Image 1: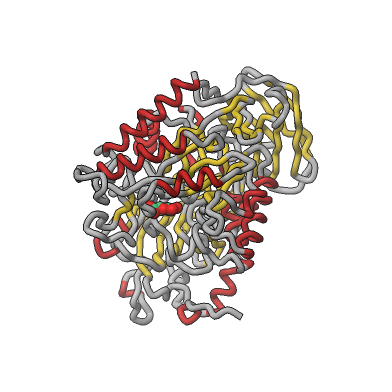
Image 2 (image 1 turned 90 degrees about the vertical axis):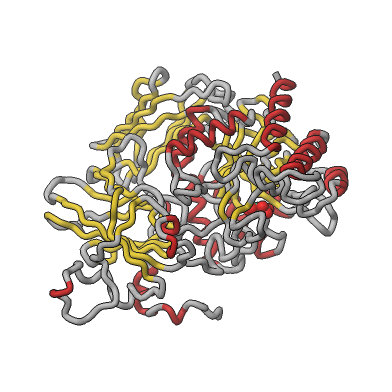
Length: 592
Ligand code: GCB
């Protein structure tokens, strides 16, 4: 068997017990239209860098003043130290910048028992693993750093004050998704919102609404999954379209197709419909756009019309907030995308905050969403697959009603090996099983043996994504011409990354790395060359903003990837910004 390099850190009996409690996509609760009780704000916070909290049972005792300690302790979950939720601990104190390991969050709340209700904890995201304790009892764990998770607290709650503790562990590990090598900063913490959701005894766990592919925009499909395997009828209303549609539910699940001709959603006409679903004592709501995305030969079709994806990539990263997203940040991001004349964003390399897709729905942007199956993860390990598969299903479950999301990305730059092929073709199948209405893609590598766009995984993808850095990591542009001429893909290709580093304000000859002039020249050459390849149906250069990554430490980078079109202040534009904006404006003009 494999040797677990971390095994000496753990008490195995504890690990085994806690490993059993993992929650995943099956535990998710449909959130649309629900009033959640926020638990955001200051939580008590204790770092646990040597991972002793589980062994020493930090969760067992209610915090107490030192006078009440039976023996001396080396930890104190009652300490004055607090951390705001949501936040990344790395940006809170200088000495926590590179902290990787466990930390404990503690917070008290009052509960009144008695009502006929179920209480579920929702954590928007915790990077990477979280273990949850209520009143000293382990109630569940989650792994995967970018998707929400839900743990039912009903039955563990007491009348009066309750103590909620969440241990978050952001240690990078070789068998996780991603593994220890990434090109982004490993932020830790409860970095998205935490809340309590009150639900009736039987509630709507999941709901889907979509245009039926191939129906010419004239059929809708709805599905409802209940919390329990009961029979009943759900009622669906779509404002201005459907008054009250009865959807029979049997064994906790029901789906139905109906004739309806909604005004179709597109970036130019981002029309959303208010949808309401009632079942028993539960009611949920959503704002849904109806549109069809498909592929025809080497073309991508939106509502039956060819569309070219004028894109840009973006990370979830902020100098002040780390991975924590604010509404203002998202609005600025889409403002920048608008200024670039984009119709498409690649949300790299993990599921971003759910608000991103909601806003894209409203504003009219197309999105690629992806899971961090990044570089050479442990493709041979069954447990790694289970983790990736769960993250994919959680992302799909969260965002499958978002019209903006047109592509599920199942990986990034994974070499075409047998274990990778087995792993990722299964992931493609998962994506299709979880949602049959979107395209499946992955950001692939150049096949170096044949110097072609060629990857065995392509047979399982609707669109081939390709990352290429001619003009930068491969300084000669000649290779790009050769690659494009050599390739004859049978389906659409989108260039999912290309770009060059530039320090904002640094000028010089275009041949000097890290100058704005060099980045500008790479953009000009790339965009001109790519425009000549008919099968390239979209380009999203890398990347909108400079972002933190501890592995880049030259005097030019100073801990940042500098391929942004805008510096990390999210204000200072580099020269290449205008080059891309002009190129996409020209494309749009040519299409109209
Ligand atoms: C890539 C990776 C991306 C990196 C980028 C770079 O190919 O997919 O995560 O940040 O290159 O800048 O090297």
